[in-house]
Length: 101
Image (cartoon, rainbow, N blue to C red; front, side, top):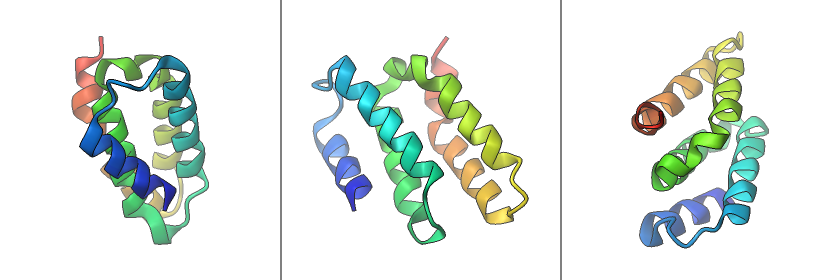
């Protein structure tokens, strides 16, 4: 429910008013929540994660190593659904990852 709310707020208002401290807390919280997710809320997590990363754009650069590490871990998982979720996440944030030098 929290992730869905964050997604809707960021989608409607954007991320320009988010300061560096809140940005860090937001990314850390999203990474933690995505690692602890159950299969029931996978789409909500993917949508929220994608919306936040796309809204932050270039500002996500310091967090890319953590994000990529989490994605790599999920891609190496033996459960096919977990690997599929990682691939779906990559497809949602690939544009931002490509733009960040």
